[in-house]
Each structure stands twice: as C-alpha cells, then as structure tokens.
Length: 241
Picture 1 (cartoon, helix red, strand yellow):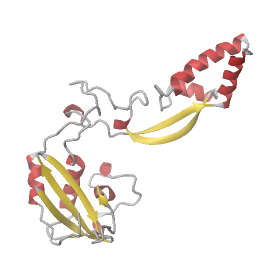
Picture 2 (tube, one colour):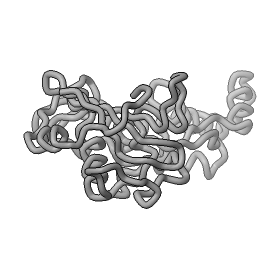
Picture 3 (cartoon, one colour):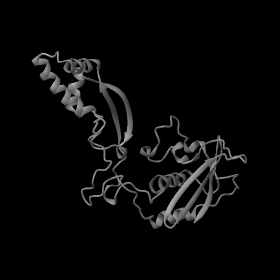
Picture 4 (cartoon, rainbow, N blue to C red):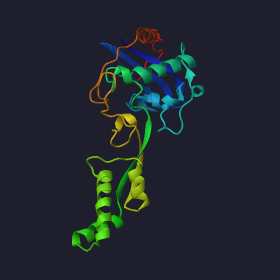
C-alpha cells in the first residue's frame, strides 16, 4: 500500500505525509509546505517530532516549541483525535522491522540518562610525575597506588563509567579527577559499564537476546493497517512528498 495524505494547513504551508506498507514494513514520512523547487516551507522527513503528541512522553525535547493541534487547519476527514491517533501509530510502528529490542523488553532503551565524562586533574598528573621520578615518600606511594587503581578503573577508554558511583564520588571529592562534559542519551545507546541503567547489549532475562545487537521485526497489528488504509487520500497534489 502506498498513499499520500494531507493533514491540513499550518503557518509554513500544507502538511503532507506519505504512508507505505511493503511486505509488512511500515514507513511514514512527511513534508510541510513543499515547493516545486524541491525546497519546503517547514520540515521534511520525520516531521512528527515537530508536533505535540497526545502522550507528552512522545514529544521530542529537542524542539523548544512544538506545533499544537490548534495551530493546524485540518483537511476534510481529519480532526484532532484522528491526528493524535496517526501520531501514536507513527511513533509506535514506523520502521517496525528495525526493532532494537525483543518482544519481552519493548520498554527498554527509552529512559533518558545523564552521562558525565571525567578526566584527570593536575593534582593527579603531579602525583604520577613524582612516582615516575621516584620522589614519592612511602606514604605518598601508597596513596599513588590506591588512586591510580581508582582512576584507571574510572577513566580508561576500555571501560569508562559515566555516572557518579561511590568510587567516582570519592575521587572527585579528593581532587584526583574532574568533570569534563555532560550529555543526555537514551538508555538504549548506553552500556551498563557507562551507567547502571544502560541497556545496550544487555541480555533479556527471558530469551537472552542482547538489546541493540541486531534489528528485529515486529508484525503490524491488523487494526493499524486498517486505520491507515481508511485515511482520506490527499485532496491536493503536493509538489513532492
């Protein structure tokens, strides 16, 4: 099935979406205000991220101002509820053959985690230099061995925790390491080594499949297909979609 729909009109032009179901795979994309030149007045591609969803958890926080349903003049056959239903399906079933999780852990990978990059401080570099020169006292040498073990566990590229574990808190408090950068990622892109709530490559307790190690297929429900087939075809011909 292939069809084009016009959701309605907004400040940047008409909202068109292309829906394709091929061999059980659903693909949805859209464009706002397409021009004959190939440009457009608004976004294109996965434009659902620009709009407010029924479920606030589906909203994309990269957008400071999401387009509200009240800002759309809906096309014939469309209203707020149908629009929200369409967005729900887009969020849940788009590219249903590229699932990173097994059927037992559909909820994995969506939690937002704050990650912190840590680095050595001048204090640690001076201690390491003194150790290399053989100028440490016996007491300082014991401190160096303890701190070195902790710092290496905390900051090596092979296994680098990016959260404030008790060990990290201790090394921070004593001035051996320091924060370099913070970022937010969803748990599906984070390993347990980096953060205890990361699930990338974590095995499912039911089937053992490791999250994110391959792309799995999830069958489209009959009611989803029926909803999409029943949507009104576009009442305007877009320059492109």
